Length: 274
Image 1 (cartoon, one colour):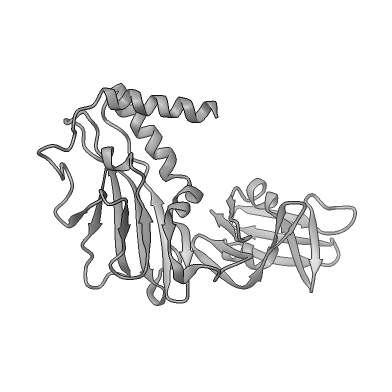
Image 2 (cartoon, rainbow, N blue to C red):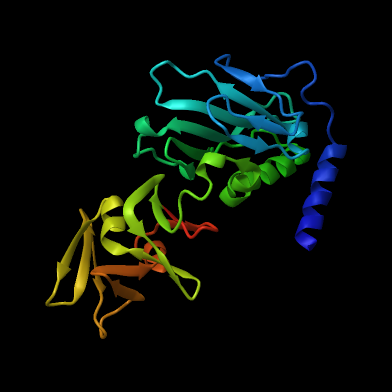
């Protein structure tokens, strides 16, 4: 509770230091290949599918959203970008996040840095949090920028603002690696810890996976890296289960041994990022 009170106080302080930053310059520094999106209605909608996003009131004060004009041959159907406009008008606007809608038939599975939001039979939604630096030294700008940056890097927070009916209840207990849903792969939960199939997950991450009956271990390797994952009673380094001829290892293995990022949503889906 103290954290939220402190955050609210900071935002209020920043507001006292501001003037109308957008007056007379609604698209300062934004390229002409985009059109402005009206945030004042409290919600925005996609042009290409049944998707909407709530806009918190404080976003309309300091942020602007733009829809990119995409080339005809783009695999992306729609791209919405959010910018923070510094109060210091000599500083350029900062792109915070890009939300992208793909036709699933043409989605490129090797995109780097994109995090998965939703996927349905026809569409894939991804988000990319942009790591741009703030030029302004104004205290109010620094407070606001850090506040919004924290919000836009919180995937669960963003999902809570979005509504995509076609994706509801379509994906559960799945493994999603860099926006790719692994087919015929499911997870299970034991004592609030997700367990993930070793072979398919590691192979999708780019590793070679082999089995040694003599050592009772799974070797996970790629050039310059090799690791033996013991599965016997006497050589286990991580919690591991054998179910239906498939070895499952705890999510902790992917974070500690393979240095991956792990997120779990309310439907049991495990998101792994390299």
